[in-house]
Length: 556
Image (tube, rainbow, N blue to C red; front, side, top):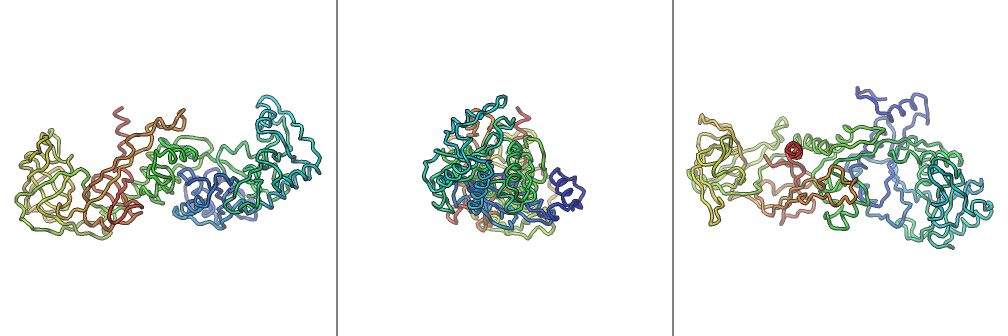
């Protein structure tokens, strides 16, 4: 039972009641049943956290079951990516199962329904079946094949399995009620013919169960106690219950919750595949994609995603979650875990004219000042010539500009106070170098200068700087709800990726590793790209230090 003070969600209330009444012998067994036809996204993460989280909370287990009933779209590469994503999020399944494990059992279930005169083989085309189903206000009408004898249906279904018919030539339908107000109960399809190679069963089968038939029966075979689906499956639940009831098998129960709708995001697998195939993004794991692999490559942590899923909770009604909450969760996590480093993305050279030539100091910086003890320190080389950000200098600064300009002073992070005395431009009028003097007795931690400045800027020693490519990622869509548009691609943000081919970084960042978060001081949180090489370091911006989009909304 739950002992914390957080209110129970409605599924937890159901489980608590079931446990109190001794239902299922006090067991809790959930399942996560992805179809291996694409990569998991943040919406799946919510379902993963819910199913695995409930099982953990109530000392139960969760099965991973791949719903591999459509051989045309499925692939083992997707299977492996799904397993990797679940484990990366911090969960481990009790059993790795496949709906294809149950093909023979499911076939026998279908035969059982035929023998009970509750299923029949229909030769109608898909268009004829759809027309005969009627409308929500008009009952359907039987096709000419609904009254076939049990013996004929058994023979035809056996022949379907043996491959005697072409794709679409025949289907197996449940015989329920053509006047039922729930269209899903108007003799739904149970099996269709697909002559396609299956990634696990090869060419052993040419008929495949429909999801609505395979789903409940697979739950029952595994004796799942709480089958948790999203709200769009509410109309499917009566068929789920009908099949289990008529087959007289273990009574698994389906419960529905609201799926995740995230602003500025699309989460339809079909639309995500379109983005990949039409080269709007690099791949499924492009850091702009809402896929778990994309979020991982961008620098999101498992803890931040689990925290996000916990914060949004479990509801019975659809609503739109602001993506800024997801960004808040990763900022919160990285603020306490990311090591601080300095990088200059748009460089301008600073020369400290009164600093000794060829002299190099080794300054010390904490890795993470947010953590007690700082998680260790690193050495930062300091010399006469430094790279600073171009934005930190203005030729004619306004009154409240607290960075560098003629006569203005700032502190260099971890180092000294410097004052700008002069600058030079190139033939195009662009400032290419500034000249400063430093106060030798103003060193950070040892300052006896008595000087007061309001600004601190970051820098990198020119002599010791290393080069890296930096990718600044932003939201992929400008529209808050791109999925609702007639063409979602029309709202793609043309500035979702900015590539800085040559940025300067601290030499310590040469030892950076993927999946480790770094705060580039004053610039944002970054991570080494998983496809980076030692010859070409690439850093991805995970998120800015503050919600820059909130400022844009206020301006608008």
